[in-house]
Image 1 (cartoon, rainbow, N blue to C red):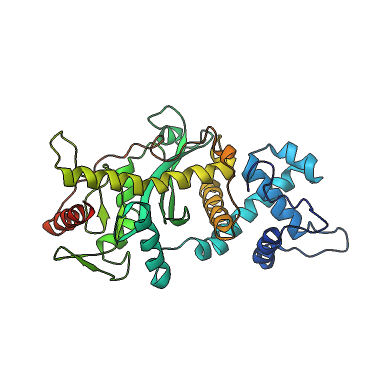
Image 2 (image 1 turned 120 degrees about the vertical axis):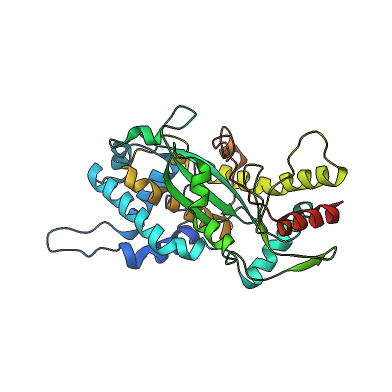
Length: 335
């Protein structure tokens, strides 16, 4: 989905897209309204179409109102309500950390990129532009000079989101956001991935995430070696393959914003509703990827991924020998 297609329920050869119909079926029980004696309700298909058009274009409700012959306030309510339904009911189904056979396949897919073993996901973050809030606007004014809300995400090897954490103001330090996220808590408690270790060079290697140099080194999160100009060949190889493997998260953000262009412009919704919009876009992104709805490379023109928008500060690493041994064993394996 993207500019020109966007699942707007335009009929092709006399029938609607199977994916469009399937999405309506998924949402129908939660958004369907009943006719009254005085007026006909707006159909599920039109409700979903209005929401998708809003997310894909960030068009003003005045424009959407003309397109769908529905009042502006009604369009606004439909989009807000549908985003909440998508977040509450579809997000748990389409966005979750891999387990079982899906985890094994994900590790295999990451390894195919550049040989990196035991990767369960890649983590990064991005700022979502928003309109200056009425309450405490200074909290949302980020270092780049605009108002935003931070979205931290983990992705798999196929550009799908497996964890999304959004809601913190753009001014809040990203290290604080990370340390308060479920991903950090699960990682520290050993609950992030099932026990699926492999022995590499005599070291038991667990499943881990890949994060850039701003993240702490943990047994469950591998960051690159700090480059002070004296890295060994093994360490340089590790860093190169780490970076090329982790690029999938930036690609995921790019594909997300290419499809749902409301995340590229200022999101003109109440601050409290921003997380619902972002989570809905991430869920629908996964829906597209899972059901084979491809991405047009032209949609990515002018779209940026994660790190250009986000500045992550180093956390106190609290590195232990186990994490160092894991990184060292993987570095030797990759040579």
